[in-house]
Image (tube, rainbow, N blue to C red; front, side):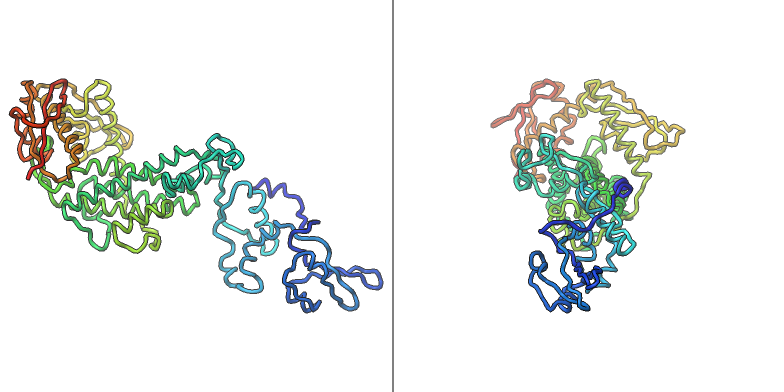
Amino acid sequence: FQKTVESAPDWNLSRDRFWATAMPVWKGVDSDGNEHTKVVGSYEELKELSGVELEDYHRPWIDEVTFEIDGVKYERIDKVLDCWFESGSMPFAQFHYPFENKEKFEASFPGDFIAEYVGQVRAWFYYLHAVSVGLFDKKSFSNSVVTGTLAGNDGRKMSKSFNNYTDPNELMDTYSADALRFLLLSSPVLAGEDFALIEKDVGDVQRKLNMIWNMYDFFTMYAEVDGWEWKEDVSDPSGDVNNPLDRWILSRVHQTNKKVDEEMQRYDLPSATKPLLELVEDMSNWYVRRSRKRFWRKVRHSFSDGGKSEDDSDKNDAYRTLHYSLVQVAKIFAPFTPFLSEELYRKLTGGESVHLLDWPKPGEVDDELIKRMSAVRSLIRQGLESRASSGIKVRQPLGSASISFSGALEKSLLDIIAEELNVKEVKLAVEDKKDVATEGSISIDKDITPELLREGMAREVIRHVQKLRKSEDLNVDDRIKLWLYTKDEELKKAVDEHGEVIATETLARKVETTDIEGDITLASVDDRELEVRIELAS
């Protein structure tokens, strides 16, 4: 745009054409041969001068209108206005200024922003400023959203003649209007660059957006089982919750809210959309996955808590946190995925419309907790990579992990590391370094004792039973009768030692280990054969 202004030639407003707005310029010659020019300012003035009122002021009718002033006959010149002059006059012409709406125009000028294709940088964008500076000595708009050129699935410019694109209606029917909209808003095309619209990319966005509905289904499934109901005011629970997972995801929601608002204020849509899917990924694959057991209605036992019951207040905090976070997702996503956001908001709150709300004000962000959680996840990734390189499955418990770290990690975060890496103990050695987010290393004791081996077998047994529950389409709170039978002495010992945990994890009334009668499912646990049978308990 700067180069366009620097190299701009003189702009000739007149054109020798027929189809355009006639220039309101009349000329006449007096008896002495002197030329006189009259520029007519309105239809009303032309009527006063000529006595003529037209239905259509284009050529050829306007060419026939003449008038006399002081004995001089005036005829219209045969020029028309360059159409870009009209386009550049849009800011005031749309209000019929200066004939009316004077205050309305002046209150809205210059415009906050303009949005157009990159080719208009040398055209409409330039002419808007040229007209505005000439008439008002002001720029025409304060910000611009410049879109690039869309290419088809073959990389060439999208074109009907090339037929190199999928019909947008078909894309929206196959995936959703939200997925197509979000892809375009987050693409380089919204930063003035070229972008190839490929169907697979729309599908990828849709799969990520589906994670929101998966979280909603998870939430409603357990809320219905537990009889949990939200209160009318969906207030921020940050000050009431203690679990670091709750405090972390609430900070992430507020952080994302703030970031999206900042980028939207700068009219940078691709940067505004980037944190949104990152938040969904964190909510689904970390917060919800890590919080699953907190949503169980009944008292559960696990390998890590020694059979202690979980606190109902912690479970209620999890419900409040997830509900609030999903409502905030509906609000923050609303400008980008309007249909998904509307349905999600109505289902979660019963409210009239998310699009009638003000943009949410972000709550407090615990930056240090976000850094520590990021470091925890980094340490876990290192640990999982270490296990994988040694060929040790995650379900196989190990004795301990040792962490060298540059800052403090509270016990609750160390417990998360222990559970994710499936180790009995995490030992922490604090390093005297400042960068909490990036420093840290981990090593795992990979010695598998017979006791740990049997515990790993029990976990495999639980996996097979849960898989069978799913194939039988049982509800999440359905109790079952469970039979487990094996001739392998070590596997039998594992089932006997951990029978109570197996029963609790699979919602079995009791684990029977006698020879099974009736339909059985064969499973393999570390190459040991296991017969499994489940039956819905009355």
